[in-house]
Image 1 (cartoon, helix red, strand yellow):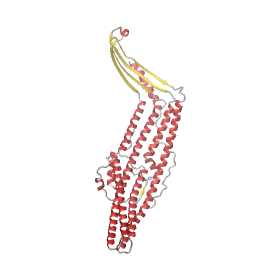
Image 2 (spheres, one colour):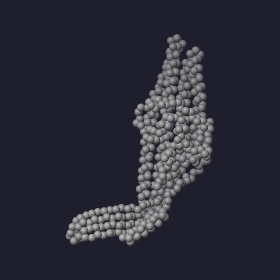
Image 3 (spheres, one colour):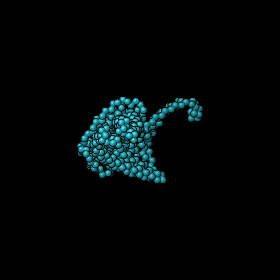
Length: 473
């Protein structure tokens, strides 16, 4: 028996030495895109810096100083279904990698069986009992790195799925924040409309009183009433927008829509002013932080390994096999064993392997171009976000000044109308202008925060978790 084990040991050591010659997974790949050292957009009117020490803010929503938003983000990260689905896809990719990784190890299997019967001449026409147990081993040595390349491909695909999950997390954070600001905008628009409606109703009451004293005509009354009706007609539309935003927010949080939202609506406080300055990481840091760029790079790396695996099909498939067993029957016992080395070399396959290599090369070029496109779009997204934020900040300043001017004009118009120095039309126009200016300012305030969120998201903020990156054995 010692001789058989010696032979099996020699075969095993030979396999280990051959397997040591296999390839290793590919590293990170360069996109081949000239990345600028600084952003070209200058955020006009806002102190802006983007030095080499600036980092990507991961928990960016805390910079807004809104505890309600902090709570919504925490709930969304815990309960959102799309994020849970992305996590499940990572688990699927990890399991698939385990399947591929198992091809690098020997395949060991055992079998056993027992039977009793008369085998005729084979058992001298007697009833006998036969028992058998076998242990078999087979091992693809992967001398030319086909299985290693497949493992590198599956590892890159797993890392791509992890980056995609991180991208879903970033997008979720952004959508929660934007939807929250949409809700704040809808509630503010409703409040402004109710305030202006009350003011216009008072103007209508004054006009009614002046009509009784023959100081106003029926035309004045109808014109003032028409403006009240037009303003009142805005309320159902704004309430529908509020309800739709609440429903969307509920889905993002993993709640059934249409629930009791009074706790959320009553917990809202005035939004804090935004910081007067803006810091953004340099383009190279942004590209390194963005999950979509990492996912595209990992898909490209997977395509490189897939090409290596396809090319390895041209070389022989070398494997070791071994068997050791025991047989026991009524008349005798036996201990069968064997060991072998097999080689299969493709000779004639009518271009199948070459076509597979060509297809893998084409997919590799596609993944490289997709990687480059993702890098360019990431740079575009950040440049656009910076531009929108800067221009919206300028617009917001002008709207704030305009609201003050329109409010003063409306007060003067009502005073002059009451004292008989101005006509009703002047009052109605001033009140309508004030409503439009306040609504525009409220929307701009929300847009400014949404644009700031876009900057954080374009920079790749929010993907990092405290647990750190996943390690692969």
